[in-house]
Image (cartoon, rainbow, N blue to C red):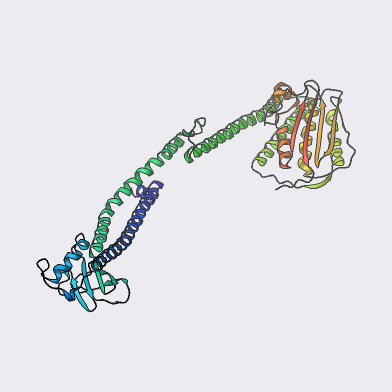
Length: 478
């Protein structure tokens, strides 16, 4: 149980949910802070604008009415000075909130103040400026700061003030709303994150499930979903390509194992049969010598097969080190030809080198000798009797070409691109007589690849066959 809990908390699904929830909450906090700052700013800006507009309107009305309280006398319409002033400024203040404070003065005389000021009045910090906006603190009038706008024109000073407690209360209410909604946002973000992670990872679950079903016995199956062009589709395609490579490798390994076992079994069976027959009855010394010669030939064949298999295995696992040395090519080729000339005596085959130009090249002598020996050995095996094998070397644009040409049955066109495959033989019955197992040219290709070169085959049925290797004159092994 604890293991499952640990797996859950370390899963990508849980991490996506946490990241989504955190991002969602962060955006909610940023939105709340942004709204709070914006409302705080715009409320104060609008308040200053409204105070300025109202003070300007009152001042304008007072000036237009030519208010002169020094010569005021009660009439049937205005019994007191306050009634006269109220009538004058009524239009300017009637549509304002009741908690707006208003004072009008002239000189040192206060000629009007709104009833909500009671016995208090607003101070005048600066009577020289024509317009002044400032904060005023009076806890008896308001627990919060009072925003004041003072305007002066000629002999009148108009002060309009408004306590910002309503703005503060609105912002506090907004904060309370966000705090109360925070748990709801948290729940929504977690549920949303869980749904999104479940939806986004559902295809991963399907990929995992299908991958678990694929074994060595059903590597031909594909993981569905590769038709999509998103990250999951690309992942599926890469996994299918990987499975195909694994299948190809396993098929090759199985075929390689079967072919290797088959090729090893044949000489071992011959050895066993000849030894069993020899042991059943006494033989003449001459017969024993014949059996020993036959056993020796089969033993050499076994050693050659094992050597080739060992070389191919080392090549596949990058265990072969190429030790290059500068070699005079013509002398090097002559030494190989002389050591192999005896192989052609049985079929009266000759081998000649037709190149005389001096060519120097960097190569691994042992490996290249093995490759050329395999090519020349094939030329002897499959060349017609009483013909000549031609070895040619030339330099073409810093590339050294070495070709071996023989005359014989040739290689069918459909087999040209297969002869370098391991254990591939054009004619099984013919190669059985010559002792070939289909590994020689595969070894050649591996050696030339190690040198950074390539191999080319040209063949005309019942005519000439040429195998050429191309090597860079100064190619460096990385």
